[in-house]
Image (cartoon, rainbow, N blue to C red; front, top):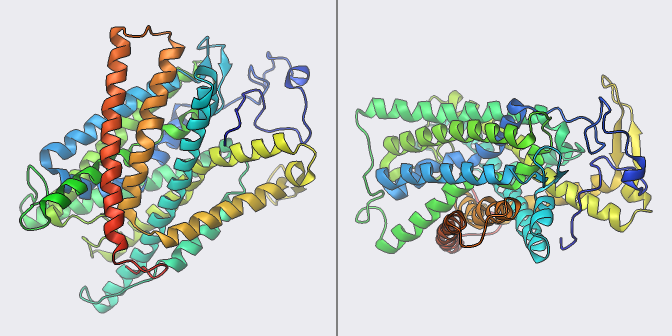
Length: 488
């Protein structure tokens, strides 16, 4: 983790180490980019698909609950402010993909490469630690969310057969194991640029379940003939005490932050984009489209979910069984969630996979276990699949560990809030701002420098409050929790 990451190694490395500059084909080649790699083919559409896959994740389902804690005034306002901050800082980060000249400067292939080029020193190690711990945490959060949706399908069918008053309790552990098995298989996809099809499928699924959740919320409001909820959120007298209200409001900030967290993989997505136009220009356009679309969905899902349920808004809109019927539509929505999370898990974990494998190759370049690729012919494919034993073992082990931890800590809202709180400020705000200041040579104590620092400090305060609220939620859950015996 503490290894400085350089940007000279190509993504598809030769089994033996070699000098890239001596072997690099001419940059004018029609098949190669200026860095000697195969031409990147990503567009605004594919980049937007990757971002939407990463952004509209399981976090959208907790927004009705988050809005209920904050109320009609603060809830939508906080979502809108997070969207503005995310778009702005993502644009700053996109400008750091190339060091120096924005058209022909040295490429930074990963988030850590960008930090290494612009900040260097201890901050590279700090960034790597935060980024990869965050990705590890997201894998856990997505495993929990997917299993809850699998349980919800089983419970929905149970309610349909036995009635809405039946307990229909289901253990989530077998579903987490099933999700883990699927991810072990998909984790053998070697590189990020081979995931474009999975991202498009996942993006379609995210729109599917978000739209169903929105539609059911609207239908419930229309059926009730009134809008539930209060300007200041959940009632202190009837639902929670003053202390719980404060902690839950802080946790709601973390849930909203998690719903907007994707900067951690922005540079990796940008590295799939073709040029011209410049990668930064394409990425800014993709970010604007994606953040605008997701904010619209977030506002609608969060607000209509709160309008439908008021103080009783469930922590997960589609699995908290605010809705029971039509059961088949609930099943479709949860199936869409599962398919989306299967893809999102891979999109988020690829940077971590690539880092560990690159580090292993640099440390043990002579090891055939790490470097050798075994070609396996695949029916229907033009090229054989290249099996790497180290990739098979380590990625399978990673998925296994995240699955076991998910079974130990299956607290959806608290985990989502904590991940959002811990990852949002350093990765979405602090590092992009610091890198942009260096990249653009913004003078210290100039008006722009001061404004950027004020933004960073404000987001830090919000993140600390959100982390405190989420930790308080975990502590409360642990009081009645029995390991490996969680049922829904």
